[in-house]
Image (cartoon, rainbow, N blue to C red; front, top):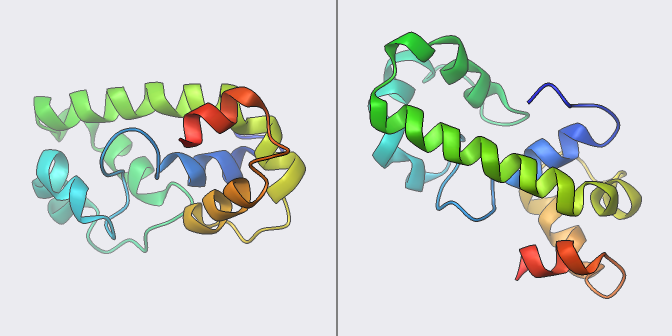
Amino acid sequence: MKKIAMGGMIILSVITFFSIPGSPDTGDPALKGPCEIELETYCSNLQPGEGRVFDCLDRHDKFLSQECKEYLKTWSKELKKLQKDCGDDAFQYCRDVRVSYRRILHCLKEHRNEISHACRTLLQ
């Protein structure tokens, strides 16, 4: 998760929309299942975005339920896959987009004919 360099925040924002239903973003009701109690207990005062909620959960790791820990572990694997498959594309085509996963996702989809095959496949 510390691989945040040029374009890293873009990717960190984009991952919240991929593969796993829901993401560490309190604005996403799908996360209410596996980490709902932890979010309400430790992270309810945070404004979602830019990885703040994920960082909060990470800081409280020793207090998280096993179900929440497993969810976040899977989510981290998806982040690595997204960084690998779409990182260069997001940086090339969407680096001027305000950091918001929905905006970046929209940008990548607008460039679907120009992005790499691996990223295009992941977007589908």
